[in-house]
Length: 284
Ligand SMILES: Nc1ncnc2c1ncn2[C@@H]1O[C@H](COP(=O)(O)OP(=O)(O)OP(=O)(O)O)[C@@H](O)[C@H]1O
Ligand SMILES: O=P(O)(O)OC[C@H]1O[C@H](OP(=O)(O)OP(=O)(O)O)[C@H](O)[C@@H]1O
Ligand SMILES: [Mg+2]
Image (cartoon, rainbow, N blue to C red; front, side, top):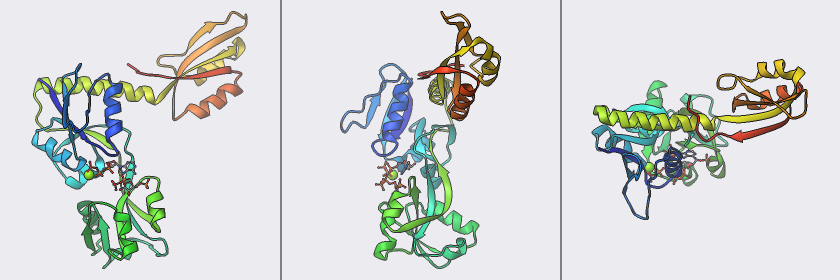
C-alpha cells in the first residue's frame, strides 16, 4: 500500500515541498516531465500537479494527501482536512489600489471593477462588508490590470510587496494570511492513516529542529546558577567541567523566537565563547 501525495509540479511551492520530503529522509525523484514518482524508501507516491487542482484530487481521494497554499484551498472550498501547517509559501491575499487612491475602508470598492484570480474569496470579502463590486477573473499578471485600464483595483497575493510597488499599486486590505499546509482526504484506511502518522512525525521533528538551535558556551562557575536559569534545554542544560578549573561548558537548546534576547542576557550573565549550531532532527 502506498499513500498518494499531491504536490505542485513547478512554481513557488515545488522546491520547498521536495526539500521537506527530502529532510524527512524520503527520496522522491522528479525527472523532467515526470508526473508521478514512487519514493524508494517510504510507502509514498507523489503526483506532480498544478496547485489549483490539488484540493479536488484530495477531496476525491485520488490523492490521499496534498501540499497546497491555504489561499488555493479556501478559494476552491473543497471538503478536505488540514493536518499540518508547513511554514513555507507564506503570503497574504490583499486588496490593492492605485498608489494615488485614498482608500479609507471597504466602501471605497463600491461599484469598482476588481481584477483577481481569487473570485470566491474576493466575493466573500465583499459580502462580509456589504459592498457591491464587479469581479473580473484573470489567471495571472493581475497587478497589471489597473495600469492598462482593465480594472480599478486588484485582489492578489502579496509577499514582499515589490510586484505591487513596481506596478504603481499599494496594499490596503489583507483579507487572508496564507502558508503551505498538508491536507488529507476525509476517508483513510487504518493503514493509510498509519503511514500519514509516520510522515507527520518526521515532518514535526524536522520543523521543530529548524525552529531551534543547539547552543554551547563557556562560563565561570560562579555564573552558573544565573545562566542555568536562563536556559531551558530539552530537559535541563548540560554542564561539563572545562580543563581550566573554575570554568564550565554549558550546552542547551534555544528556540529562534527567544534566541537573540537570551544571547544578550547570557553574555551579561558572564557567558563567553558562545557557539550556535543548527539541529537536523529533534525527537521529543
Ligand atoms: N510571493 C509569494 N511569496 C510566497 N508564497 C507565495 C507567493 N506567491 C504565491 N505563493 C504561494 O505559492 C503558491 C503557488 O504559487 P505559484 O505562483 O507557483 O502558483 P501558480 O502560478 O498558480 O502555479 P501552478 O502552475 O501550479 O498553477 C500560491 O498559491 C501561494 O500559496
Ligand atoms: O509581493 P511579492 O513578493 O512581489 O510577490 C507577489 C507576487 O508573487 C506571486 O506571483 P509569482 O511571482 O509566483 O508569479 P505568477 O503570477 O506567475 O504565479 C503573486 O501572484 C504576486 O504577483
Ligand atoms: Mg495555480
